[in-house]
Image 1 (tube, one colour):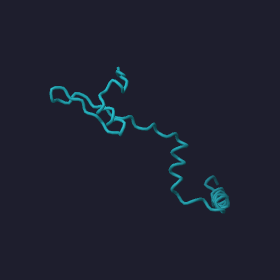
Image 2 (cartoon, rainbow, N blue to C red):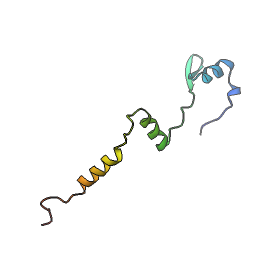
Image 3 (tube, rainbow, N blue to C red):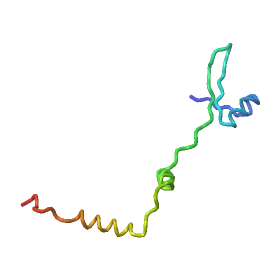
Image 4 (cartoon, rainbow, N blue to C red):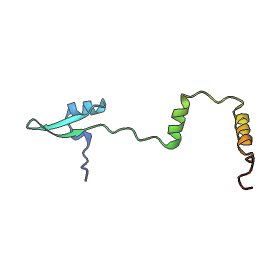
Length: 85
C-alpha cells in the first residue's frame, strides 16, 4: 500500500526541488532509502494523441475526398478473372 503525505510535511528544499520537477533522494545514515519523483502528466486520450500527431503533418488538400473516392472505386472492382469461376 502506498502511503500519502502532504507536501507541506516535507522540508523546504524537498518542496522546492519537487515543484521544479526534480526527483528527491531520501537517505538514512548515508544510504539511499527512497526516491520521491514528481508525477508524470496523465497520458493523453486517443483523440488528444491523434490531434497532437496531426498538428505537425502536412494539411489535407481540397482534393482529398476525391482521392479517397478514386481509391474506393479502384479497390471495389471485381477481380478478373473471378477466383470463384
